[in-house]
Image (cartoon, rainbow, N blue to C red; front, top):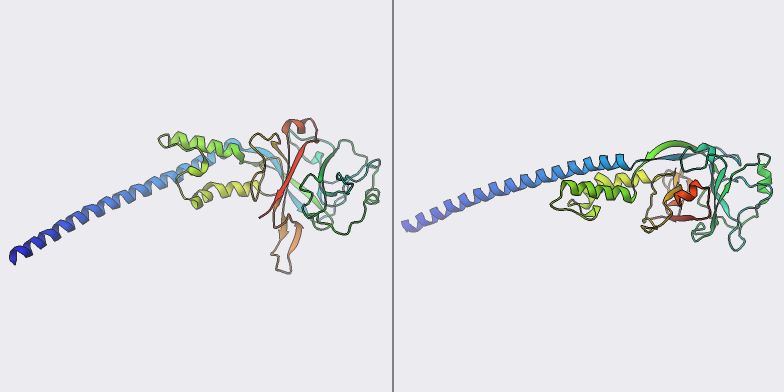
Length: 307
């Protein structure tokens, strides 16, 4: 009996000794993993700032003013400018389009952009807001200041329904020169700099960084997404569903972006819509940069999506 008790006591001692070693080893490994993760987060933050700085480009952001625009103003919605000898732009079936927006190019100071004239975006006022080629981008290089708003209004034909995403009588635009970052170049550069640090375990794609999706999104993805949304000319586009362009798409410049714009919540009395693409979506117009420099607006790609 005494021998058995001694044997059991020895087993208990050995067990406690092994357990202590294992706990110390686990604690050491846990601390090591935690330190590695902290270092990874720090490196992601450093790479983000570096890539942001490298990919930043000049562009314009704009906001909508509750002021009725003239036919010569930069505006969203409204009547717009139409020369005396021209008609309201139409689609291939002869349906009149409606003005989505126009830019008085004197308001814009970008290397690629015209510095004079009026650039307009016309879309069909159907349920899809002219998504499938029912749109026109028109550039008036010379402006006839003798044209009046009544001259233009007299050319419009009445419609039973109007699904223009712009609500109200039109809004003057207030521009502010700014900067933007993002796009494929941003994520390609991010992968490059990540692999320079972690050359022993390189990745091919940004999403392969060994950290949870939510953490990576908070550190990088959401910041880029928020940066790319909003009203803008130039810079990098924002999407709800994703970029419709292929990697070799020649439409490499964001000519114009109009985001949904509203105050309050839809179920509240003070809810006010200025722009609404479907269910709070966003609209984009793309052009080849060299064609833009040449003032050639014959090949523009239009897209909008929502959640």
